[in-house]
Every structure is written in structure tokens, then in C-alpha cells.
Image (cartoon, rainbow, N blue to C red; front, side, top):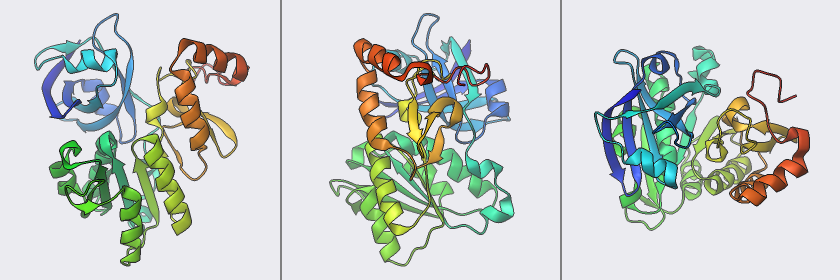
Length: 295
């Protein structure tokens, strides 16, 4: 059992929890995720790691209530426990494997949309701890839906808040803020965009036009988290990939977002899942990532 050290509602339907999970905290890196089950018979839910404390053996998760499984997670209180907390899973951010001297030469921009702020935070924090500054854009529909502003401000070199309705910070979507920053003279070598699929799609269209290489996290399409359900199957540069075992981060300019979003909609129904399994045949799933089932 994995004890809940802290439980807090950040804003409407978005929750932060700090979990006692020593082995996960000891080994996880930014970009990776965990699979959580509230009870023994509960739904398995993949969640990107928001933060971790190796000394205290805790891992922080942030999630939005979108169904019965996440609702059950949200109802847990401090002092209670999750039945399962499995991880770290997925590949760490490319930053973790890039030589520090090379990273220090780059101008890095992060773009976070909604709950995507949570997985952006550990990457920005990891870079700051190594003396590498980065700019961050955090976008939300309105001020009341912004999360983790203070935490992000503490680790970002420059933080730009933008709301669709202009209720706080700059006015407009994150894509407008990207364009405005470049027009103001900012130059970036790489962009990392994490958030809703539609936001990442238009971020990539914008950065491609501006000539900024872009990484996206495809965690929104993950379901099973092991590659066996076929839920996170997508096409990247003409090749079939699985977000949970090959990612979750990919070159955003190579991701077929239209296909991924259409497939995500179809996958939501049992009939749709059967259709995709029949249509995709042997390429429908990626195995466990270790057993060769993806071949």
C-alpha cells in the first residue's frame, strides 16, 4: 500500500497528491510516468510524474477527474493509501540523456496547457538544478483554471501566463504567446509542449513555421501503460509507435496528430476498440515493451 502524504484540490476537478513510494522516488526522472490503482479492483490509471523527493521517498502526481477511476482517486484522503503505485515507466526526457555542456548552449522554451503544467514542472526544475535556464509559457482558458503558478515561477527563468479570455496575464492562446515572444526578439533552439492534444498540434504547427524543433508528450493517449491495449498507438514520421513504451515524448513535427485524435475518439467505445484491433491486426499493440510482442 502507498500512503498519501498530501492531498489537495488545486482547482475545479484537478488534484495534487504526494505519495510515499520510496523505490519509485529513488529511480524516476522527468518525463516518466506511474500507473496508479486506488483499490485492488480499480481501473489502472497512467499519470505523468509531477515531482519527486528522493530523500523523503515521495512522488507527486497531478490529475484531472475525467471518469470513474480518477474520481475514485480524488476521493482518497491524506493518511489513506493507494493499492498500487507502479513505476517509473516510459522513457525519461531527452534532456536527462543530453550532455550538460550541450544543454547549456541551448535556449529552451516550455509550453504547458492546463494539466500539462504538471509534467512540464519537473523538467524545468531538473534543468534549473543544473544551472540551465528556460522560459515557460503556461496557458489556461481562464485564471481560475491555472495551476502551479508559484511553483513554476520558482524554477523558470521567465514565466509567461496567458489566458484565452484575458482574465490573467497575456490574452490569447499559447500559440499567440509563442509568436509574440519570437516577434519581441526571443530565439529558441528547442520547444517542449505538453497539454491537450489539440494544443500540442497547433503548437507544433506554429513552431514548425518558426523553425523551432519541438518535443511533445503523448501521455494523453495512454490507457494501459504497458503497450498491450493498443490505446496509445500512433504514427510518428510514418512509423508506428506506442506512447507508453516508445515515449511518451516524441518529435512533435513528426507526430500525426489528426490520426491520433481521431483514433482516440474511436477507442473510447468497446465497438471502436474491436474495430481498431481488427483493422490494425498484429500492429495493434506493442506488447509489454520487453517480451517482443511489439515485433
